[in-house]
Amino acid sequence: MNTTLRPKPHNIEFEITTACNYGCFHCYCNAGKKSVVELTTEEIKSVIDQLIEAEAELLDIVGGEPLLREDILEILSYGRSRGLKMLMNTNASLATKELVKNLKEVVPDLLVGVSLDGPTPEVHEFVRGKGTFEKTMNGINNFLNAGFDVTLLFVVNRENYKYIDDMLILSEKLGANLYVDRFVPVGRGKIFKDRLLPTREMVEYVAEKLKAYKGNVELYIEENILGEECTAGRTHASILVDGNVVPCGHFRYNPEFYMGNVRNERFKVIWEKYNNQILLPNVCAKCSLRNVSCKSGCLAYAYLNESKVDDIHCKLL
Image (tube, rainbow, N blue to C red; front, side, top):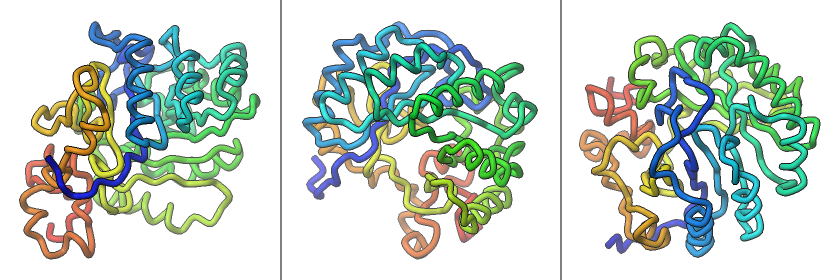
């Protein structure tokens, strides 16, 4: 049992399905087919109750594509009724005017994150496939026109990093927020690692552009871009499609770091007993620079890397 006083869980991701109508190169969960162990509506409601018990703040509904679940309105509505701040990540291709209208009636204050990997069809469709840009943009506009708070979700890769200025311009033009994350080569992304993995210089280019930005777009920047302390297992966790809880979704392929499973243990118990210090790479634990510079960077990426550190942020490399 972890005797250290644990912070309350802030942002909990909940992967309610692996079904998806896209086949993106960088997909960390290799989405496409519906999982045979996907949680039922009642099981999901039970987990939401458990998150309230654990005093979680924000529930981020992810997939796969959440809009493929027929009970998505019921899930979102239940989370809101229990007092959770609700966020849904989607590719927006299924966000018709009718569906968006229904969402607005049921969950009027839903935060919407839409995956957009570039400001033009050429850049976006490199990752997501032909014809996806127009579908996504139509969905984004439907959400915005209905009055939703929309954040564009931009995952930095080798091909799109140079378009960060254009993403800021597009966000401002649309009246949307911008979230910036970094590609981590797991799942389907592992297959396309050589085509997608950004270099240190590319990530630094993006970070400097974001730090210098003085416009009106509200920015949400992941720690793995700026070199800040990773929140995995500390204030954040991900509940996978089968109920397994991991420090973040990128640890889904590392059973040794699983926190527990909500099908046989309460989330509050899982959260309070977990010691996130086990995620710290051995090299980082002994390094005097850890707490003054890199903060160990992306912990998931460190375990995938040959040097066993996040070489994007490590000051010794």
